[in-house]
Amino acid sequence: MRHLLNPLDFSVEEISSLLDLASDIEHNLPRYAHVCDGKKIATLFYEPSTRTRLSFESAMLNLGGSVLGFSSASSSSAAKGESVSDTIRMVSCYADICAMRHPKEGAPLVASLHSSIPVINAGDGGHQHPTQTLTDLMTIRSLLGRLDNMTVGLCGDLKFGRTVHSLINALVRYPNVRFLLISPTELKIPEYIREDVLRANNIEFVEVDSLDAAMPELDILYMTRVQRERFFNEEDYIRLKDCYILDKAKMKLAKDHMFVLHPLPRVNEISVEVDDDPRAAYFRQVQYGVYVRMALIMTLLEVAKPC
Image (spheres, rainbow, N blue to C red):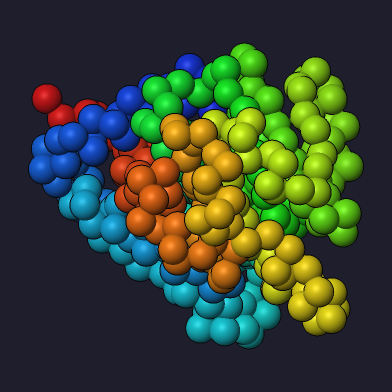
């Protein structure tokens, strides 16, 4: 039995195979409609989510399986003080696989140690978000045709953004990937990412505070929102939330084949006027997330690809 807690839990070769399966699902969706008949996924979401939770549920339903779970800690026995380890022991009696989102870093790891079913980390605090990373990798590969030899700009909340941390961890394993880290000083990449991931792997990166200056160099621009829920001080959030707003004027500075990604939800960091630009790929990214999660569920449940 395997779990997915960190994007590094799968090798580069395993990720390639998973993305190949996701791509086949994309182009042959009806063939997969019954491969998980009789299987159940439990979605244990201790903090709010729209895309990730619904994406997992859509993925399992597309495979012919069914869904149970909860969408907030207040609607679960966590409100009564039940521990994560007890919850997963109970859920293991009901479901075949589990996707967990939790505000505390490491909670899905704790669950995996007490679970008799595969556990998928659907986001833990400001730490990791591996299924979003798989989605990002599929999106980039589909748009550019590769996961190497590119310059990636990561913009906005690089301090608390778990999607950013996971994506960096994944992309450093591919050759000739360069990063432009675009953020205000207060939201710079954490020290452990800078030292233990980027510098430890001899990855080229530059930390800048100007989105305009970075735009012409990028193959991928990964925008993030400034996350109100990660701030202890409302004044700091208000001061920083509008640091970077991507609009048509900034898009004119970019390459013709530069693509914009965003894990969503957005607030106002991408103007709606950008949505009609063919380089805006964030809603395509959402669709790829369903295919990736379908492939992941099949992989962890060891469900065979249909003939």
